[in-house]
Image 1 (cartoon, rainbow, N blue to C red):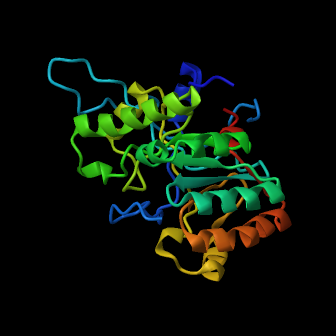
Image 2 (tube, rainbow, N blue to C red):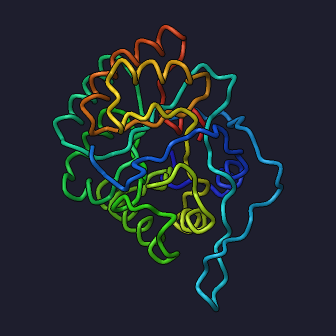
Image 3 (spheres, rainbow, N blue to C red):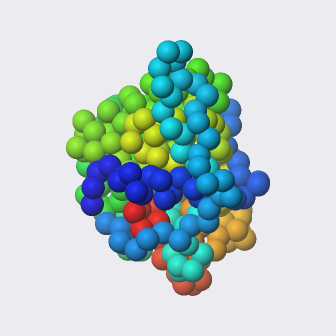
Length: 266
């Protein structure tokens, strides 16, 4: 699998329509607590034929082409879901989560905060060696819509460089922080870094609010369906406690937990 998405993949996924009007931002308050298939993705597409141009380019330079709407789900005909984890938190919880996933034979995507990996570099190999994939969730988890275009680029690029330094790849997917949806400036930075459309989600059980394992499982069970992309947080004990029941529900519903690349055929 190529470390970088091909231009055809970028353009194909860039047309995916955003869904799920009630999606909640990952850490609205700015807090940071806490081998895919080769089929062509049949994701939904927007009605616009071409992406809107970026509006945040430096004067005197040609703007990067902006990707289309965020990818929020995969093919609804596929009996699989992508569990995506915001990568932050204690190494002990990460190890326990990986143990639960190993016993369930589940694969996930961890969208890592760059400075978290820089402080705990062994976690990158631990996650990848367990069969999961790593992606980019910015360098320091800022509320990105409040940043300048230059600051947005730093958040994307610095995390990509850290991933590349630790793993030999910047990761295939980027998800912005502090917002459930990207902006033109965020999309332009993602395209410039080689990611294409941002990876969103259509299921958010708000685990970062620590609602308790039972409430988390009920919320996820109400919303998840074939092709869903689920937003979870790696560093929360409540998420760890709920994970066996989450995986059991997916098993009973006939939904395989896979990486985002697997779900989207990337």
